[in-house]
Image 1 (cartoon, rainbow, N blue to C red):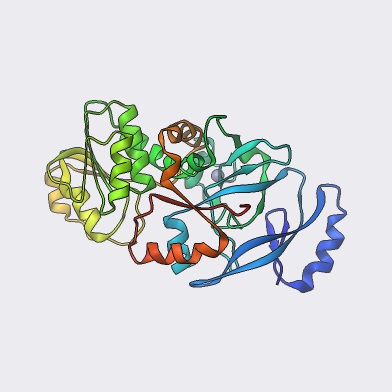
Image 2: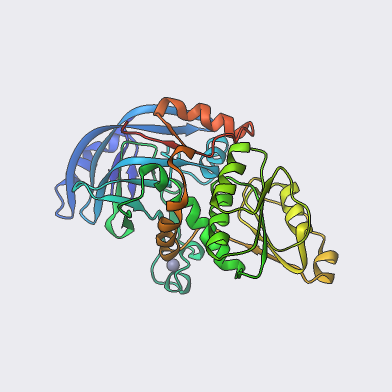
Length: 348
Ligand SMILES: [Zn+2]
């Protein structure tokens, strides 16, 4: 089976190729025609490396040679349970790469209708028609991807490809940070020192917060958190904090986030490990605690994250080939988070 790009519409069935070839002659389409490698999610826990045929794409899109495709929670949870992803599907939404002119770019992966109150307010994630590249349509687990021109942002010249892997997760962190309205005077606790947690450490450090405490079970991630400015990094947290961020999203970490927040404090939730959670509302009401959800980011936050990512070290990134990906996803699903950040380097 081959997959053809045709604008945002994916044509999967070979029988449709004739229709597609007829449409390539339309003025707004560019015939490209190249064979590239892509990792196809065909079913739950079924990833297959295939040659796919990128036949055409709109002239408002740019064909990007992918240098880095981040592997994070979305990917290992999607591998385990494809959910809303249309199968077969190419995952990967934290993408950086090269334009045909050789410009180094990061891809902002969100799109909305552009017309609703949320889109106008720069909160595309709340648009009824929001889509995410690598979830609703094909993404970065491939050698190339066709992307609308307005979603491309040029990378700072001094950012390495490895550092660019932190842009997308750090944009998530930036949104959570801004939603929390944290200030320099606040004490900050962060549950989980994966990329989201590290981004929050970088935000808190940039704000010059004096108390930035982080918990994780991975020594390498705790070391990275220290390097980014955590004042304490340990396997567990205790004490009371003005603002607690949960980047994990299990029953335990959500309960912990509420427990660690002071009376009148805030808990901000970014982690997706489980969908449901029982809350002790009696305690919440009496202690006037606030619970806040945070999901993805605006273009502005994405741009800010490019500069925040400069604080990361290239050696924190594990560069993987197509054939390494499934093992890495299985590691994550088996709670092995020893790698600070794993990425696919599809053209290496
Ligand atoms: Zn909208």
